[in-house]
Amino acid sequence: MQEVSVIMLTKNSERGCKVSGIDLSEDRIEMAESLGRPYDCQFQIGNAEKLPFEAGIFDKMVSVCSLEHFDNDDRALAEMNRVLKNDGTLVLSVDSFTYASIKKEIQDKALFTNS
Image (cartoon, rainbow, N blue to C red; front, side):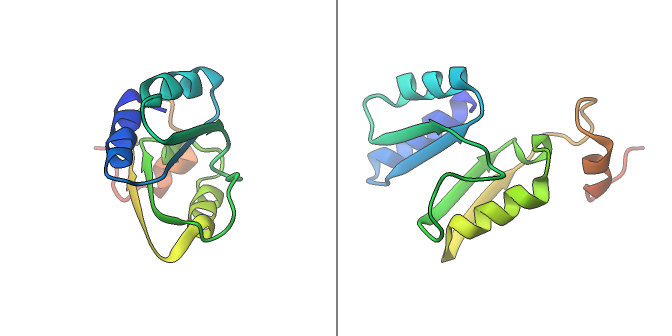
């Protein structure tokens, strides 16, 4: 979980939103908890490919620069869809698909090609 993501989440908490966040890294969760301490935010270790939430509970979801790093991006998207309410909104951003660490299969799914 990036610091900018946590700051964005805490700002939404100030507006009365109930905020939840997950990350695979215990260190990232600890960082998020320290930044989110004054706010009503819940952070836990979790995998986007098997979200630890009930179906249809979120009005909005934000995924920042993570989709291209998942082992199974289709599964992660299906999970995001599962936990969103029927009229929910997903805000999704991705890093550059040209990073050397991004798997070739995921690069091939991108809507552009490298020149």
